[in-house]
Amino acid sequence: MTVSSHSPVVSERADAEALDRADPLASHRDRFHVPEGLIYLDGNSLGVLAHSVRERVRAVTEREWGEGLIGSWNTAGWIDLPMTVGAKIARLIGSPGDSVVATDSTSVNLFKVLAAALAMRPDRRVIVSERANFPTDLYMAEGLAALLGKGHELRLVDGPDEVEAALGDDVAVLMLTHVNYRTGRIHDMARLTALAHRHGALTIWDLAHSAGAVPVDLAASRADFAIGCGYKYLNGGPGAPAFLFVAPSLQDAAVQPLSGWFGHASPFAFDPGYAPAPGIARFLTGTPPVISLSALDAALDLFADTDMAAIREKSVSLCELFLSRVETLCGDLGVSLASPRDAAMRGSQVSFRHDDAYAVMQALIARGVVGDFRAPDILRFGFTPLYTRHVDAFDAAGHLFEVLRTQEWREPRFNVRRAVT
Ligand SMILES: *Cc1c(COP(=O)(O)O)cnc(C)c1O
Image (cartoon, rainbow, N blue to C red; front, side):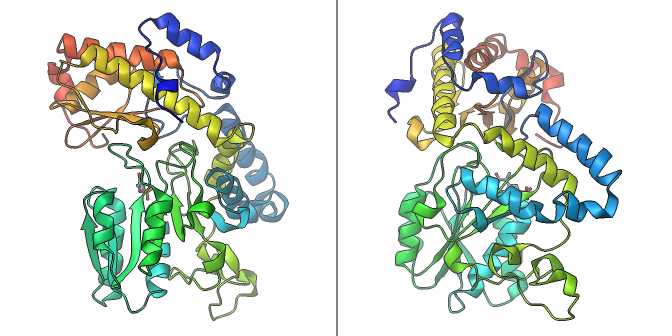
C-alpha cells in the first residue's frame, strides 16, 4: 500500500465529504451511538457503544439472567463465551479459531503467558522488551520475575534496531507491543519473531493497539503468544475482557500458573487436584464475566461483514488526511509529528508533540474533539474506521488550529490535571 494513493491533498471540506461518500464502510457509523456533535478520536482508549451492544446487554440482563438464572449457563451459551468470543477475535488477528480465548484483563493475560513462556525456557533468565512499551507490560514482568525468585531480568531496548543485539542464548522471551501506544509505530512482527526464534527465544506480542485496527497475521508471523484489549478498537465497553492467543503447536506444552477451575480438564468433576484442560482452555482461570463478554461478543459482530484490509484502507486514508491537514495548518504553531510519517509504519492513530499538550487537549475536548494526552507531551488522536468520517478528521484539524492560533489552551480551566488523562 503506497502512501501517495491515500494522501489526496484535502484543502476543502467538500473534498472530505466526497471521500465519505465514496467510503464503503460509511454505513457502519449508523450502527454506533456517536453522541451528537462530538468528534470522537479516542476509540483507541475506549471504543464507542454500538446499538446492538446495548440491546445485547439488555437481553442478557433481563432475559438470560433475569428469567433464565442459573440455567442460562447451559441454555444461553454462557459457559462457551470465552471460546466463542475468542474465535471471533481470532479472525481479526490471523489465527485459528481455537487458539484464542477472551478472558481476564490484558495485564493478567500477560502474566499468564509470560509465566508459561518462561517455564518453557527454564535455563534462560532474560526477558527482552522495549523501554517505550506500555508500562503495565513492564510492571507485570517485574512482578513475575520477583515472584519467581530465580533472578529473571528485564533487558530493555530503545527501538527495533536494538533487538538483535539484545538477543542471546540467555534470552527466554522477546515481549513487545506491536503498535506503540504513544507514537503508533508498528513493529515488523514476522521479522522480529524470526529473529527471536533464531536465538531460541519465544515471543509475546501485545496487540492492544492492533486488534481491530491494523491487519495482524499471527500464524504467518509464527508468533508464539499474544494478548490484547477488548475495550479499545474492538468496542467491547469499559473494562471489557481481554484476549489471549497461544500458537496451536505450544498449547499442550504451555502451563500457566493461575490454575483456576475454568482451566481444569473437567471443572465440574470437582477433583481436588489440578489437571490442565487440553488446548487453549487451560489459559482460563475463573468464572467468565458473562455480561461484559456478551457485550464484547455483540461488538465483534460489527466486524462480520467487513475485513481488516478494508478497515486498514480507511484507517490510512483518515490518518493521512488528518496528518497533512494538521501540518498544513499548524506547522508553525508548536506541534511536531510524533508518529511515523510513513503510513505503512503507523497504526490507526496520529500523535503530535506540543510543550503544553495536556492543556491543548483539554481545550480540544471542550470544543467537542475528544483525543487524549499521554505524558509528557503527546496529543494522541485515534481513528476508528467503523465510525469515524473524513469530515471528522478535517474538522478536528481545524479545531486544533483554532486552539493553537488563539492560545485558548492557556485558560486556567484547561490546566487543571484530572486522574484519567
Ligand atoms: C491499553 C493497554 C493495556 C491495558 O491493560 P489492562 O490490563 O487492560 O489495563 C496493556 N498493554 C498495552 C500495550 C495497552 O495499550
